[in-house]
Image 1: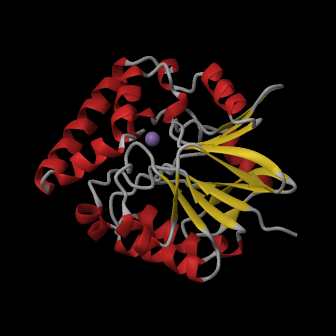
Image 2: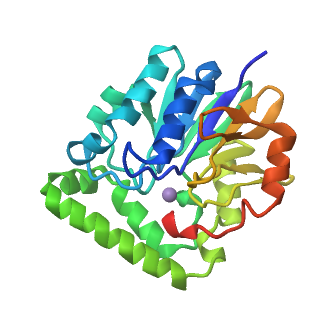
Length: 266
Ligand SMILES: [Mn+2]
């Protein structure tokens, strides 16, 4: 039986030394090795100011992905609004293939659209303006020519502004616009979307669209969405990288684990 295809997103890693990076490394060296493929749908990193400035903070993480690829598991990366600046050196070191956002893949005979997810938050106009910049290759190239100190400063300012802005923005405005999601799905001829970004893990399933939102990682918990011919399921990734699924997970997620406290770090 297929071990399934794994999806993670929104780890927001700062560096190799933090607990989430160790948890990820253990997972990549463990259960991920059984996966048919692994997809990282953006915001793996809290910030990526360019390969020249950010690789040094994440060498062990990139190596852990490369080891997974060497073990025969294909790994794919989609840029998020935090790590849109990953480049060729990132790809070479991590051995991950970078996908366009959005991309449609075939999952066990079903066409599924993958996106980081900010694309779907069409009511969040400042985020849409920023997205128009960072998805433009010329804007990215100009940004990457700036000296490192200036890119660091710009990232810090952007992050502070975004945190400040979020306290004022309505929660609903920052979530997915259901019509935008349905229109995107229709345009690509799919009825299933998988994405991250909102930090509101949930299965939104109705007659026209099934939309699976991947959980962000927090210091105390991490999750992987696994798709197999049998369906969609979520499993907890323990601190030692093991997977916990089924009833243990259901009990966990029905509690306070998935309340919407953490809109701050999108
Ligand atoms: Mn994001």
